[in-house]
Image (cartoon, rainbow, N blue to C red):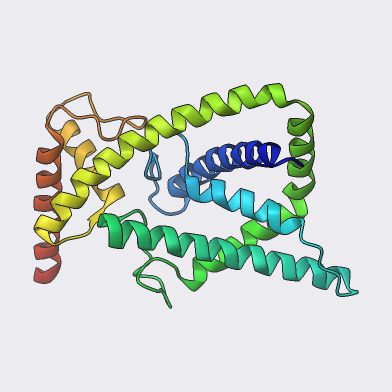
Length: 245
């Protein structure tokens, strides 16, 4: 495979993985964690880059020739490598956001054995299940999709189009992150991204504003700085209530 073809395949897998991961997170939050419909992740659109990188890496790992003489052991080793790699990606992503941007996209601090609230044994186990699902259920379909893509490079136009929209979304979200980072440093706090979304939504509902929505959680009648102040006040009030209890 030529270098350019390899880049296009990586972009193709990244987009597919990012979108599938977004759908997975939407339903996971609705039925298991938050119990409500939430637009997950850092971006406004239906992308979660962690899953995009994850799908690309799992596909690459699946191509590594491992021959121990036992088929079950080969499969186990590949699944363990995939699961460990997903945990590493999650940790690096969490560290970048918390340390670099003062933003928490997720919080495992209440989970047993967690490391800095970024990774924990429970979700590392879930990543192993995802890796096993990929190996046994998705590996062949993804391989066939990649073969089809390589033989139909005209589809790269659509991949490039979606990637362009993704990059615009990324630029917009990084702009918001810059404002959040400055606010968080001034207040000496770490902003919980999903709680900020909820704060904006609650304010809009309380004042009957039809601005914040599932697709545009940061759209508001107030300035973003005012939304951040509202989030900080709400968080401080909740902390005081917990101390009283």
